Amino acid sequence: MKIRRGSEASIAQARENFARASLDGCLKCTICETQCPVMEATELFTGPKYVGPQAERYRQGKSVDKTLDYCSGCSICTTSCPHGVKIAEINAQARAVMKAQNGMPLRDRLITQTELEGKLLTPFAPIANAALGVKPIRTLVEAVIGVHRDAPMPEAQPYTFMRWFKKHTPIPSEEKRGKIVFFHGCAGGYFEVKTSIATVEVLEFLGYEVLVPKQGCCGLAEQSNGLFSGATRHVTKLARDLNSAGEGLTIISSSGSCAGMLRHEAREIMGVEDETLLEVGSRVVETSEFLATMLRTGDFPVEKLRPIDAHIVYHQPCQVKSQGFGKPAIELLEAIPGMTVSESGRACCGIAGTYGLKKEKYDIAQKIGTPLFEKIREVNPKLSACETETCRWQIRKGTSAYVVHPVEILHSALGLSDEIAQLLSQ
Image (cartoon, rainbow, N blue to C red; front, top):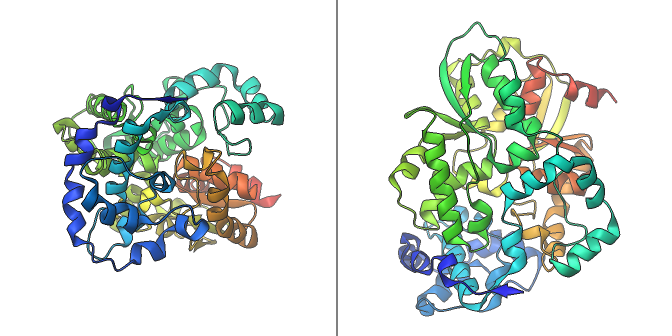
């Protein structure tokens, strides 16, 4: 079933966004195509250059061929372009136009409602998890909705992060570093609750008073599926929610992709110029980036880190790469005595948010991720690190490894939990 609502895609935003102005910088050097993980995995996608700046010169705001929908939106083309062409942004805008004019699949509307999914699954966590593991049910979901029967699914938790936060006692600290705001994201609020808890406890251990205002979805899943109007409503409301905790305060997020939505994607892809969003986005910092900065300035208590004797693979997600702050997680993890970190060497794990969930794209996503899975199994099949939730779900499914945000390893090294040590001793 497809639903036609042109206003939902905000076609005018897609046509007029400043990213289109960069297309004339394209010299057809094809570097973006040599780096594209989707082109490497399938012939169904004609490539970022072809469907991006090359095609955009002639579209004139009209719809495009369906090969564009095989673009995963990983942004590797943009980050690898030597001429600064906003290829991924142009492709995302064109996809929004295409879906608005040709019809939006019902599935793409359903799987973007991440906050609603969390609210529905949490009260029934054991039942929901059991049902998601039943093959006939998953086969039926694939037939009716279009989500692949083997696609990685989040694990529903029996309680939300906010329920924990309201009841927890802050970690005592000798330092008093002031207030800081935590943005947990939908997955961090409902599914990757342990990551959010670890983040808050590490920040409190370091001497911060952590503030967590009531907050909703950032709209990233909607944006990546071409639902620009809904995404714009969500991200602008979120900016106001986060700002309500205190103007000028640093905002920390362990959801790397959601941080990117606030920092640049809402503006660069959807053309949102909301003043509060722009100001709030300038204060958002990913957790690994924030803690590594403390390490460099001498403000991180490295003397309190307990040894963890392990060699692990770290994979930096595409949407974290696109924020352009390097790979601070490696520096942070290698500050732990005994820890050796190998970078994955792969541009993408394949999941790309909701891309790898879709039945027609599942095999492509798995093919993209296979070299990464093999490296993790070779180096350390027990433990790996990665900053975004959907990437962790993909890697867990592909390797059976315990894949965590780097802050969770740091949490263990600071003596705030024994989970990692117990895992490695098995």
